[in-house]
Length: 376
Image (cartoon, rainbow, N blue to C red; front, side):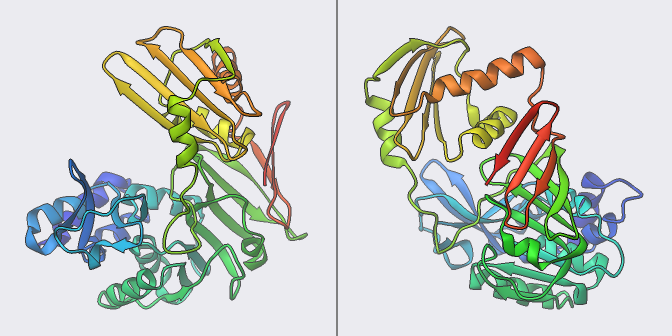
């Protein structure tokens, strides 16, 4: 494969001509980090083998897209052609433009030591090594196969950063000037603040939101920063081979149950997962809500469920006011409508650009104008 040509084109697509990240992107053989990956097909997840179709491999590897490399506990590298795993994606090669975006937020300068949380396929690690030097880069992941595969593939490119297999939400070895996470967390692990040197910078995202949190380490062990005015979405941290089952049974119930409260909604039904600002605000105010959405013909339906047993289902024809069924201790749809009303009245929600103060135990206190919130 003439990968240099493809990598140069990718670098032109995702970086400015004067960007210091153009060279790292243009000189990284991304296809070598993703020899096989998963794609959605009518029959479910289907593995793609790059070596079997180099043209497709080049197109996929050097496009600004994320490539799913692991579904449930099954990595694409270990899959047979007829494997059809069921479940959620558990690892990926993050879209290169988003990797560069997170690196930019890191404010990386010569000589800083970086901790990359969430090795994945090793893309961020590779770019950081090109820029900082491999001796300044440490990458961690909970999956031993991911760290070993990335170690071998980067070594083949003559890059030898430090790799560690560890649950990054727990204790960490060493201290760092920068920590950049490409997995989402809630709360911010106290171990990250402990591992961050005084004056160091943290960049992470909050689980089930599109919020990018950046903060500088304070002398008291906490950190001060902001919610950036752009967004990103990453898989949440996991502590084993797969994610727990979640609230699938409650979602099933919510689709068919009659509600104790039946009302007419104020706003048309939308796919909340795709309305990033609304989804993020909902997660901050009511942590743990899971979503489902269906669009069949002219009928739109949405379900919200919460670990406390609360659920809501709204169904509407086209853009008409929905009929809402709710059960459990909370009125989830009413909470959602308060957020949407605020967005309609004020034109924005107060999350993006909010000031953040992180205490040493990882609790985030948000403030913007008269609004305050907590992520813990």
